[in-house]
Length: 482
Image (cartoon, rainbow, N blue to C red; front, side, top):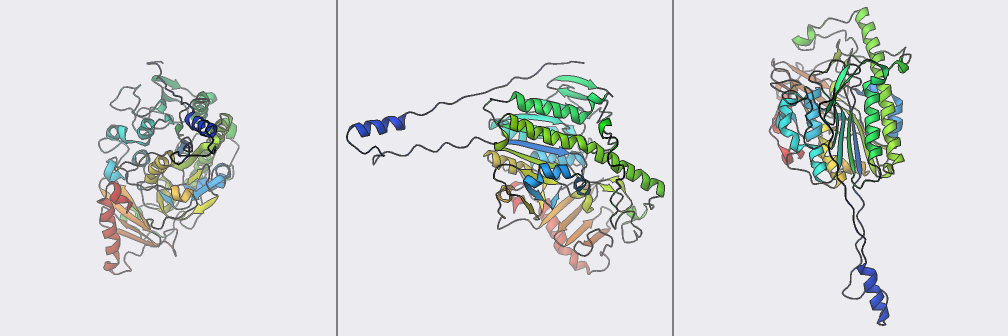
C-alpha cells in the first residue's frame, strides 16, 4: 500500500586554488627566490573530509550472547576498540534509544517508559530537532535511519510521518507492528508498505538491502554519510531466517552461578516471590537462546555487507562503525528469563565496539554509557557538542588515550511506576527500590550478584552512594560530564 512518495537530495562541489602558484612564478621572474617572500604565507593544508558514521543498534542484545557470536568481534572489535564496561542508564528499549539519539539521561529527555503517557514516540517527538541526526544533517551529512526508531512510532502522527533530521527513512511502524521479523509495516521514505511472511520479507535482510542501497546510491556524492541501522534482533520472539534454522542446536542460556539462583532470601520481596525455574522452563529458556542466536546471524551478515558496501564505494577508509545494543537482558539469571528493567549486570551491560581510521586494537575497561555515543559521533564529525548533551565523547579512547579525568561510576535510572535508582561503581552495585528496600553487592567478590549485603553494613555506608545518585539526578548538560 503506497501513501506518499520520496524525499529530495542535495549535493555540492568546490574549486581549486591558483594564487599561490601565480605569486611564486612572478617572484621568480623578478629575480627573487622561488620560495615565499616575507609577506607571503604557505597555502593551508586542506582539511580532511568529514568521516562517514555508521551506528548499529541491536535490540536486547546482552554481552554473554554477543560473546557467542564471534563474527561480530572479528568484524568490529578485532579491528578497533571494545569497551568492556559499557552500560545503559535505563535498561528499557524506548528510554535507552532516546538516550542514544539525544545523548541525555532519562531525567533530562523525559522518556521513562516505552508507551504514553510516560514514554514512547509521542513523548520523544519534542526532541526531534535535538538528535544526532538533526545535528549531523545541519552540518552537511546525508542521514539515513533503517529499522527500529523508537517505541510506538508513529503514534499520534500520520503513518507516513518522517521525523526531523533524516534524508533517507526506512522506519518500522512499531505503533502497530505485529511481527518484528515477518508480517510488519514500514515507512519507506513516505510510502507505507506491508511485509509478509515469506523468507524474502525477513526484516534484517530487507534492512540490509536498504542500507547497502543507501551507501551505493551515495557513491560519488560529496556529503559524508550517517547511517543509523537498527535491526529488531534478538528481541523476542526472536524469529530467525530459515537458512539459519540448524545452527546453535546445542546452545543454552548462560549457566553462570546466578542461573536459576537457588537462594533468593537476600533479595527484595518482589524478587523473592519468583519461583525457581522448572525443567520445562529451563528447556524453554535454552530454546529461546538458540532462537536469539539464530536471529543474530543475519545481523552479522548485515555488518559485513555494510563494510563491503563502504569499501566498494571508496568510503571505508574514512568511516567509523559503532556496534552496540539498547540494553541487555536476563536469560535465566536470578530465575528470570527475557527480563530487563532491572539493575542486574547482564541487563545494564551492553556490547560496545568501534572500528575506524586510526583506532588501535585495544580493550577499554573504563565505565562508559550510551549517552556518550552522540558526543562521540559529533566530535568525530567535527561538530560542536550542544549544551543539552549529558554524555562525554569517547574519542580520546579511540585515539589510544585515557583521559586524565573520567567517571568512576554510572547511574541506572530504573523506573517502573516511580524511580528506583542504582549506582554501579568499580567495587559496588547499590540499588534503592521504590518499596524502600535496598540491594548492595560487592562486585569484586560477588560479580554474579548472589548475596546482597545491605543488611550487613552500617547505614552510614550508603550515604556516599545516595549523595552521588542525587548529584547525577540533578545534573543537566555540562554538569553531567563532571
